Image (cartoon, rainbow, N blue to C red):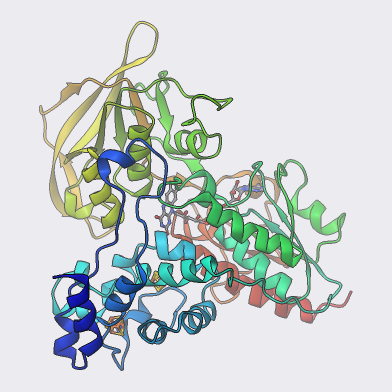
Length: 487
Ligand code: FAD
Ligand code: SF4
Ligand code: SF4
């Protein structure tokens, strides 16, 4: 069908039947053969026409089940209706009532397991891939506003005389800082790395989330008056107690994330050529190791790369490895395609780009040569047994099915734990057995009065939107706490 026909169909659609007949609009994207040689964003975003057509697929359900799938409860049908009326500013106003980072969440939210999972259109068609493309439409609104220079700086209330420290500059810290500053408090954000943005900058690659977008959000905070101090490791440069007792901070929000990589504890993990996904992605994204001509910290040449894991981090690592010049990249994952925890779109993109998937296999050892350099991976075949505590079927190794495969690099992407530094230096903050901070669910307050926490440090490795939501929830509670606190 031509675009003209689709536009006509969208304009004339009145009944649910007519709306259900409009096909889902694919996102234009770079050709896989071209994009594996550059770091530019893969998905290019909807055109105005595509956004209009897609918006008209929404049935405007009275009970709007999609909203319950959004962790920050954006009024989805309302913003989509505004798009269908070509009122993009109106759509943006609806979204910004609940979300501070639509250009980011529209790109990286796992929509198929959140808002789009509950969309009536997907349910009627028995395929979540056919649901209304809520995330793409959200991105369209945010990008259109940015292109028009209309993503304005929020107003800041009169100075309250109170000071709040925000530890970490990822999405939870950014959201908390924005809401606290809006309320008129002095806000200082402390970031251990030399650049702000957390995982949005050092973890998620440029080809999925352009860093200029994150930079824009950080400079908005700057313009609002948030003081961002980089190269400041809370727990080493100063402890939380020092910030409160010596520097006069009235409250602290900790959004320090989950940046401690997990390993498999198999033989060979200390060989040269084994990297955690965190190290690999940080070197590429933050230290620009892919820019071999200019980077001051280039990486060793990689040719045959095995990536352990099946989540977003594994997909990002595999696709980055291709762009760094690897000839063969294999995802080794112990369950089947159905259980891959990564966003579906990332799996599809990785496949299009030539990443191999070795499913139902688990690495049991990494092998090395006489120079202690990786030269192989031993894997065992698995089959799926009964569901485990996570509800997914447990992978069961098949005895005697081991084989050795030829690789020179291994990237371990099986998850992260929280960094223990703040806990070690502030033992008054209670944590669970995984090291995550225990907080009051309503307020995000920790066991240390005046100290709040949110994002991955509380939830374990989770999502951008959940982290942002917790940052905002904590800011509401901190504002209340500071209201009742005399200076
Ligand atoms: P982070 O983003 O981790 O930020 C924490 C910040 O705190 C960091 O900058 C860190 O340097 C700083 N810090 C830590 N300790 C200290 C200290 N002691 N002092 C000062 N600063 C400190 N989620 C999605 O929704 N969609 C995706 O597609 C997706 N892809 C991902 C891909 C990768 C490679 C990774 C690693 C994660 C991905 N996630 C994704 C998860 C998502 O990025 C995180 O859930 C989210 O960033 C958590 O936000 P946060 O604010 O809690 O922490
Ligand atoms: Fe969906 Fe994420 Fe947007 Fe919520 S923030 S509507 S979950 S894309
Ligand atoms: Fe629109 Fe789907 Fe939400 Fe219904 S469930 S209002 S069709 S986005």
